[in-house]
Length: 428
Image 1 (cartoon, one colour):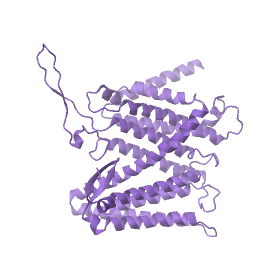
Image 2 (tube, one colour):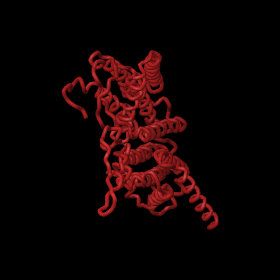
Image 3 (cartoon, helix red, strand yellow):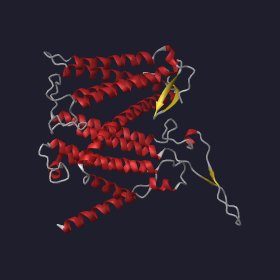
Image 4 (cartoon, one colour):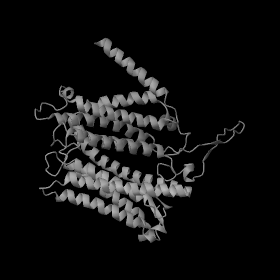
């Protein structure tokens, strides 16, 4: 047995060393994304097979005989999430104030991957030795952090749609305008098609499903409102206020339907995830929330989370995001110069301090919040009212998703109407 443990330890160390050596300074962001992806896989595996093992730990669950299998599954997910959150949260605190690459912490951000992987493993393992009270508090805090991540996810979506639209408009060629129109129409058709299918699935005959009907009708009304506002003459002739990672700026959108169409399709998708999270015994849930449907919804949710994190990581350093610190050349800031001179010696040449292209602290904060959100997604927002075979089920999940849809709509409408309502005000 000891021989096997020694072999596993040596293999793990070898894997960490080889993986760390493959991560260069340019691929550091991808390395963090990969580490986050590994944490998702570990959480999922432990949720499926780790409950019997946790039941043997005397400090988890104590002497209570009322803890269900789902409770232990949520414990496994929350403890991995806590270790992941601590890792990225500590990095976020350490990286506060890094403005140029001459700062020693810049090398900490890009290098030292062997030590980082070991520390991440230790933090995850340590989380499994913490008492239930700490995990209970973390579960409450994670709900708040997950809500913040959903808000950031919405801002990422708005930033992506406006960037996509601007990229094609700037080409100023007929084929790109045709492509813009085709994608916009296609997204709108898909959005209304999804809404129509949802009416069939979540409004079965013979039952009073007024709440589901309200959610679906609101989704379709919002899609119409997006198009009307986007194509309004006053909006078309004004620069539109864009919210990008919390920073406001103006861009000319020329009344394009593309952002409106993409946001409409996203709202239809979020409405689906909300309705599919309704309790499996709710008569208006036409899908009956089988495990296959539950797992499919989880995969879509996880994919959306990973894409959001990847986009924020790769988008970091863009001039439109507050991931860029004030000293970043991408924001037009002047480049600071570091003069090194010693008395009694010949004057050395000035060294130009290269500003960092994005905020390392906020970069890690996104991963910390994403860790909380993924834990809520896997644990059904820590609700234990449903079967342990079901994932992300319950009214808490429903209202979180519907609330996300309405916040998305509100932020997008605000991005269009803000310049009209406050023409003399600067939103930066």
